[in-house]
Length: 117
Picture 1 (cartoon, rainbow, N blue to C red):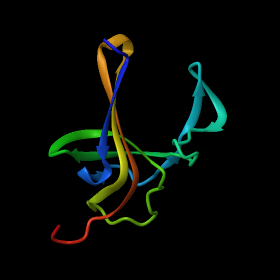
Picture 2: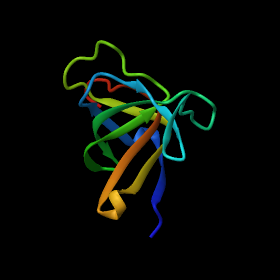
Picture 3: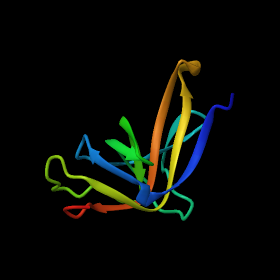
């Protein structure tokens, strides 16, 4: 079994509610060690990470890691729903020697869902 599986998605197929309102720049790891650099996307833009409850392709994922080229706005109302846009990807990986799965959803950009949508 591969150590990870990446599933491309259209970013607009994902919506999420942040469970933390702080996003942090993702540090770059090399050979399992943290470096002074930051993780970049395919277009060399810095990535930010935060936790959220995500619904993607009609399936609800409990709290997972989200990575995006955008930071969360500093003043989001509680329970706000954000919707992705652009390129997206679901990344599933083995953790702890295969006894646990880690899920990260990458969304290029996102915006606040307009009422009634």
